Image 1: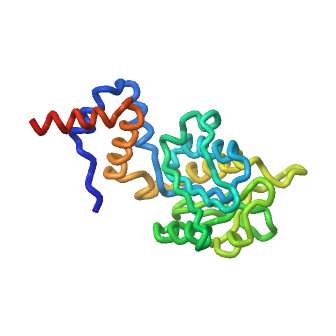
Image 2: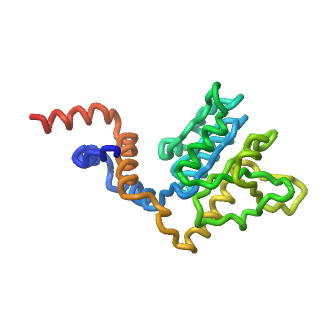
Image 3: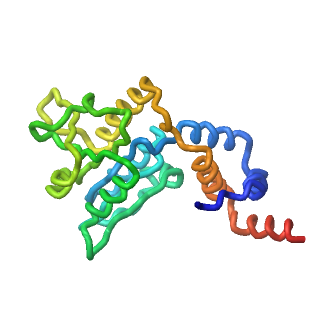
Length: 229
């Protein structure tokens, strides 16, 4: 069991954070979830992946998984507008093993059903996803979509019905539609355990306080020095 954050340190760092910022943090924590998560596979254009991170933060999604094959992802701060510091990124780029299978194994251990987003005939429509289940949505790269490997090892495929001539939305738009729909239907179902536990909130609260307070490492040293004397 992981050791819980030091409440005294949290309160000490909190002295350097405004009441308004604390209120924003608490509001965000109250809506944070790991019930749904997003996987990005080998994204070619970094600004598109960064736009998805921003979307995930807006919808309270805490974890984003990045599968790196040919392309390594680097956060674009101009696109994320700071969103990347509030969510947890998990990267998979093993040369010895399949990063897709490494990612999927991790997700399944956490109880997720994995759906690749693809408009291929026979795939589910967005409204057929069951929001009561933990769901991981896999978005492929801009040129080829999800890989054959993702198609093979995912639990299913899902798409947003299109009514025009184009086949798909921009990746960040697709993520927005999926997450909006899933969160809306999850709220209607009042799912037990949808939001973070108090322990998870406390861990995030500490992480975010450290992000916000300038030179938080020095403040931590000062705090521990003060309680030792």
